[in-house]
Amino acid sequence: MQHDLECEQLTKTFGTFTAVDQVSLNIEQGKFFSILGPSGCGKTTLMRMIAGFEQPDSGDIRIKQHSVLELPPNKRNVKMVFQHLALFPMMNVEQNIAYGLRCSGVAKADIPAKVKTALDRVGLPGAGSKRIGQLSGGQKQRIAIARCMVLDPDVLLLDEPLGALDLKLREHMKVELKQLQAQFGTTFLYITHDQSEALVMSDQVAVMKDGRFEQVGTPEELYHRPQTPFVAGFVGDSNQWSGRIQKVSKQGVEALTDNGLTIHAQNAGNEPLQVGQRIRVFVRPEAISIATSSQSGRKAARTNQLRVRVDSKLFNGANSRLLTQSESGQAVEVDLPQRGDFAALTAQEHVDLNWSAAQSLCFAHSDDDNDAE
Ligand code: ATP
Image 1 (cartoon, protein in one colour):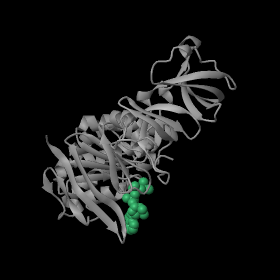
Image 2: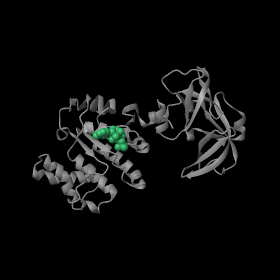
Image 3: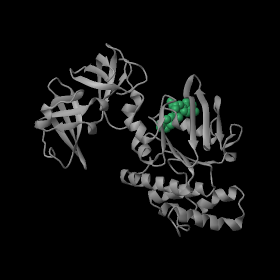
Image 4: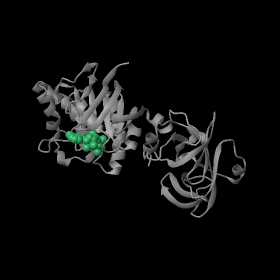
């Protein structure tokens, strides 16, 4: 398997602070790889080391199997798209794209054809004479990408390039970026704190926290099989409850939440769990069903069941999110499809919820651990 980019045990400190801590990653040729994490977790520092703007304290960076640690940024065949795109406002579109070609010594006579091909490939044929100020936000994004791709990089680095766009355009550009990446077939390394961007666009995502990778996987793996409480809490929405284990069996655990709910759950962490241990439980709002009265009576083994009162209903397009509470004070959020038996549910009604133990993921949790808050 060919890797376009490999980082091995990369570490970067600033004084006594470790911004990137022994991070390793391998990106296969032509894949869309995202690094997802909260502000300050070290994403930009990692990307700046790959681009050559920051020197690691230790570790190695290989592009197409060759170490680039000794090479300055302009000798590494990577290009970077920044959040603010850094297009030259005094130049027109064609001049912006041609600039890098001129700097890298491409023969003058070959430049117009390369610029034309780049504009065609990003879907803006004939836009060469436009000024940057005449372009929409989405068009500017495409020109920023064309300007990099015309140089045929081994890896394109994208540092939150959709961050400055409004919500609607960002949604549109997610799809467009993914399509452009597939069309160019170039390896993309994308950093973001927005989980929906990472999940929609990526082949693989690394979730980063405090300078380290918590988990690397496909979007589906991260969403359905988080391996740490941080990933479970950061990727997607979840009900999150703390509690204490009462029973452990081959089938999973039974725990009592701090709000008095007895819950059947499965251990999603790597450590075995024991009776008396504190845990954190994660249940997706869409994993919870509202039971009809006939279902309420038939409770399968290890199904979680809870009677709640609907406190409010938040309309969200295809779904509504119900904010509910049990008699013992356990708050539970549930997604309710717009169509179905319970679409007309309103606040103050009482309903029975159920969900399986397999959809209640739990992890060992210490009380000073605020990972999932
Ligand atoms: P954001 O999403 O907010 O850009 P990030 O995940 O990209 O955050 P970095 O910019 O990599 O995070 O910063 C990681 C940590 O390293 C932060 O605590 C930051 O303050 C620190 N840091 C980054 N660059 C320097 C520097 N040149 N000197 C000192 N500390 C730095």
